[in-house]
Length: 289
Image (cartoon, rainbow, N blue to C red):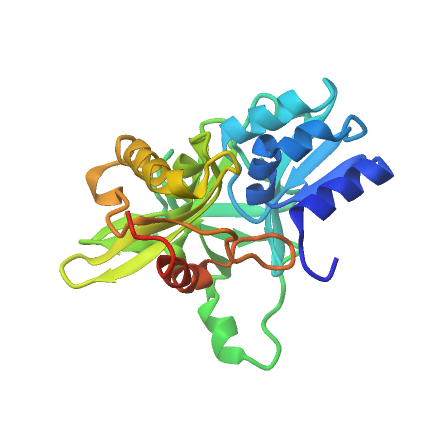
């Protein structure tokens, strides 16, 4: 497809009896909630492979329940610059929410803001080196130099690792919302939003604020069962749902807005830099809550 369309994609998968689906997490989440997915025959699917962002344990379990008993839901983590991790079939059921262990030959460090090794089990930036690592950005020595630290490639992604060596992707440094010096990962708030049964899709970004620097603001696509006149009440319900589950500085103090479609790339991945513009357009029709 020249542009990603969820319904066309799903219908195509059922028509050709696809055995492997390659999805970004937002599409995987919609798959668990959309009535069309339940109406189509997807029993041919043996494996769902996700990448591009974190996939929650809850979504993984929901996907697994939709598929044949021997099917697997795998989550991986990589970049154009290099291969990093993969969740293998043997661990998929036991490590829901993980992006797996490092690929063969890959070494990973998790570091704090000073580039010192982070304490075990805590979030930190992912630094990587290995045989698949690129040699540099073409004709851009400055960007190449900035991308490395003592021979390690600096991914800009925030991860943590458990006691068994499995990695979990939790956010991206450049996307972190700075609230009074506190860092808020948009992906964390999006995951909470998507737990609500009325939310089909969600996006969060930072809204400039004179007092706090930034505050989180959210955009959601509500389920078709929510009529236009019921959207204000639904948005209030969803916002209260999120605010009750996160620390006070992570609450959606910038507001929550319904949008018909969130900005996505050709693969279905959320284009976060366009969320505020999408919200501004929606606010002309829907009051902020």
